[in-house]
Image (tube, rainbow, N blue to C red; front, side, top):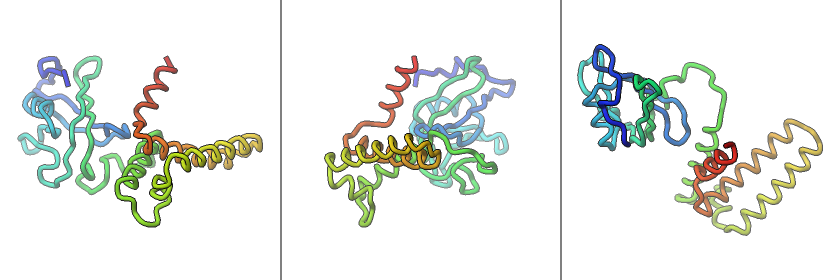
Length: 202
């Protein structure tokens, strides 16, 4: 993290708003404020610090609840008067127990679902719980996994030929799931796929 506190445009109270975003899923988690001291502590890591306007004191997020925010990066906006904090939460972020502070609306599922599913697959790989299809698939090895991907790809082709939207969505979801299992089995991060897509977009 190369950001320097002197590069930030502080408001009249010496504060700057900080938007916290999940480093993996990109889900917006919360909004708070930082002063120079809390930003400096955040940049040192490992946790995110804020300035509490109500208590008028420094605030290490999670110090009381145990639900810390492990900082990954801090990025200023184009004007330097707002910060984007990328962090990995160790538990629910909101004081209500919800995973984020913007739970009071219906937010359509987006790309973060892939990240969440990849995390579940990784956990199944670590724990290998009895009765888990994912754990069984991983234990059977690459040959079994790629065979399933071939089968699911063929199902996508058939669904596409049938022109049935619901069937297409179902089969593509199956293909994506098994592809994520392959990534886990081969140790290829989903971020590498994103990076390749970005290169192709450019």
